[in-house]
Length: 90
Image (cartoon, rainbow, N blue to C red; front, side):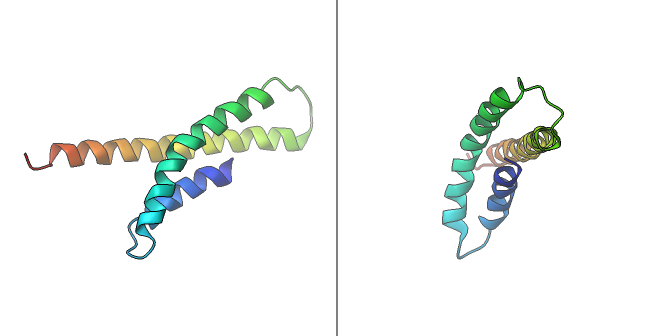
């Protein structure tokens, strides 16, 4: 899940590149909606498990990190959209 969130952040930066900009923009929009769905689904499945297994604890921590990455990136996207709408010519 952390890799999915990191790919979401990287696709945002890649969409500024001239050659890969359009495919990266499409990937960015797909990951915008897929990432939270996958995070919620995985959290729902893993949160009820009770064990001392270190891999499960590491996976839960990765979910929290992925949620933080997605939230930060989504907030940045909303801010940029608000700025672009504010300064859009009328």
